[in-house]
Amino acid sequence: MGSIHHQAFREAVEAAGHSIYFTNEHGVIEYVNPAFESITGYSKAEAVGQTPRILKSGEHDEQFYEELWETITSGEVWRSELINTRKSGEQYVVDQTIAPVTGETGAITGFVSVNVDITDQKEWEQELKRERDRLDEFANIVSHDLQTPLAVIQGRAEIAQQEGDSEHVDAIQTAADRMERIIDDVLWLAREGRDIGSVESVRLQDVIDSAWTLVGDGIDQAELRYENDPQSLPTIEADHDRLRQLLENLFRNAIEHGGDDVTVTIGVIGDGFYVEDDGPGIPDSRRDEVFTAGYSTGDKGTGFGLSIVKQVAEGHGWSVRVTDGSNGGARLEITGIHSIEEERSQSTD
Image: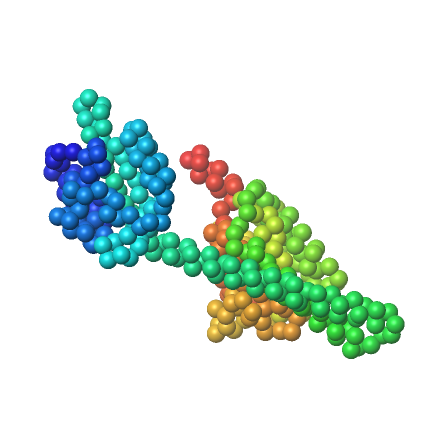
């Protein structure tokens, strides 16, 4: 391939943190940078004169390498993840790009290969996959092993209520209903809570009203009020269903802690909104705990509500925090939300 002519270019390659090597048109290594030496374990003297096959791991078949060679010899850039082997025999993973180098006549005179070591990233991805698989398995167990007997309990309790009014049956029905909510929350966190779906233009007031109707149904004494004109609530980019899930859980949390006669207030703050109740509030010492899955201070909630709120908020890139309400209750603030009107005004500035 010849010598590297430009000193600045050579210094940049020498200093690069990624493994870089040059070969001639036959694929024989003519140069390796220091990062190549430290990552592969092969010194410059050991690598020069060899081909990149010294790094071959055996994890890829011959067709893989044939396609690589056909791509670069045709003048195209080749990029792929590749499992290589260090001199020690230890495998590692690189994001490899190989580009042909042409001379004055346009003929290929060699190739340059840049290799980004992504071993840690791939190990993290594998661990994340294992965690997700375990979570899915757990969700399946919850779904299959708990929902079936729960349905039996609910069915029998309903029959018992029809045959005779008993406070014990009412207690069973209440507990069964709570179990059903816990199961639904756990399954949501395990299966759906990881990602936010497609976002759309959403009128915040519409979603708030919809969520309150679902949660407040049958709780006549609970009241929803707006601190400001509801029309002042922004139109935002959000996953409609996930946003409604967030609001439903905020409202359930307020009713759980504030009681069936709670007043819930919605207000606008800077780059977001707040949901405030007039219940007993949440002590400073426990405000970090409330977002932990399973945390609950009452016998009505599932303990997963605010964990769902946090996941949905962070999935949108928003922040959520607990603070004091004006009436001594709990106030949860969702911030980091940019209204569509703001985005339009910024784009025209």
